[in-house]
Every structure is written in C-alpha cells, then in structure tokens.
Length: 309
Picture 1: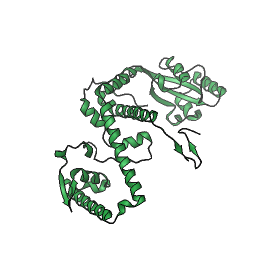
Picture 2: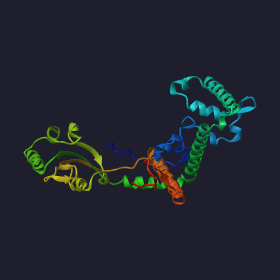
Picture 3: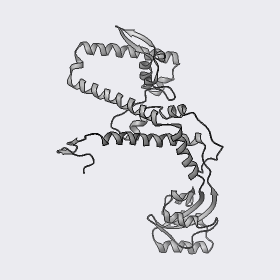
C-alpha cells in the first residue's frame, strides 16, 4: 500500500472550477452507469463542451448550400479523430475539421433529398441519436447544478478526518490450517527470519514480497486481522494464529504511525468521481421512482418487472 501524501495545508478552489473539472468528457457518464449507450467526449480535455459555448464563442466557420457549420461542429469531429491525427499543427487540424464538417453537411443534405429520413430504420437511429444527446445534456446539467463547493468540501473533510487515524505497516504469512500456522510461530520464536518464512511457506499473494502489506488503517483489513495487528507494538509478531475467512495468519507489525491527509488538490479527482456517482444515482433513482417501467421479453419470454429473476 502506498503511504498517503503529506498534508500541505488546505487549497481553496473556486466552485466554478471544481464543477468544470468534474465535467471534462461526457464519457464518464456511460462508464459510471454501465450504460449500453456509448457517450463519447465531444471536446479535448480541459476545453468547454459545444453545449457550453455561448453564441459569440460558437461562430459560423463555413456554409454549404445554405447550411451552416459552426465551430462546435468542427470541435466534435476533431475529438473523434485518432490520437495520431491530432498531432498536426492546430491551424491545419482545424482546417481539416472544417472540410470534414462540410462533407458531412453535404452528405446529410443529399440523404434528405433522397428521402432517407423517412426510412424506418433511419428514423429509429435518428431517434436513438436524439436520446443520446438528451441523455448527455441532461445529466451534465444536473451534475453541474449539484456539484457544489460545499459538497466537495464536505467530502474532503471526511477524507481528511479518516486519514488522521493510526496506520500500521505489517507483514503476514498466510497458511491453510491452524497447525501449520502454529508451526511457523514456533520457528519465529526460535529465531527464524519472518520474510524468509513468508517466501517459503505463505500461500498468500504477498508471498514474493516476504508477506509485505505496506501501511494500512483498521477499516482496510478484515476485522479479525485489524484487531490483532493494531493490538501489537512495532517489532512484535502474533503469538497465536489469527483466523479470517482467507485462512490462518501469522502477523508481524513493523511500524506504526499517524496517517496524514492528502491535500484538496490530490484528493479532488477521487472526490469528483464519488460525488458524480452519488448525483447520478440520485437523479436516476428519482426518475425511476416516478416512472411506470416494464421490461418486456428481456429473456425472450413475456413481460417482466425490473429486477425480476
């Protein structure tokens, strides 16, 4: 386990910046929700999304047969290019995006002129695309609305409070049975080296590192293990095997310290993700509570209520 970074004092970040940082890329919405609808980020990281651009910031950059291409249209297309294609100079890259946007405009016009917009399959796809756009815009708006500085600060305060608990640095030897664990304890009492015994006899994943578990807090381990480890002083090993659902442990506590909180800047990415999940769960939970939902033929059979097995 990597030790927590040292506290360097609070870092005040304006609410507007906190909210905008959490909204970089709409793809996080699909990831967090496990949605079957892929929502791709529409702008490079750090840039405002097209929906956030004011009219003056989203000028018309080209016209074709009366249709308009705006800067946001070009930015959407550029965000979809592979990484290697985005390595050219910005002016050249933007010019490529303009040409591609013009082509799309002309092709869409040709499709409408041929009546493709009336094709049933095309209509379904258009409706699905509209749903995707509305999905993204609505959830981004709710996140922007709910992700307040007070909520972020409250989450950080909880992290800071939890991070000031004691931590211990320990090693362990995991055995399949109690008798094997007692035999290891007898070897340790006879002067055997803990790390060598761990490499030779442990059945746990930390075997190759001599049983090293790094620093951890009470809540990070199962209760039985934490109770035993935190009851020992540095340099002590357990005089009786410790049983958990994983097997039988012999524990060596090497060090003990008071954990220190990360700065706001260091904790911010994790806080953003956690609060975004909370907001999405709240929004979707509220919508579902007020909705009349029926899953029809989810397994090829008849109607089923959501969650039915």
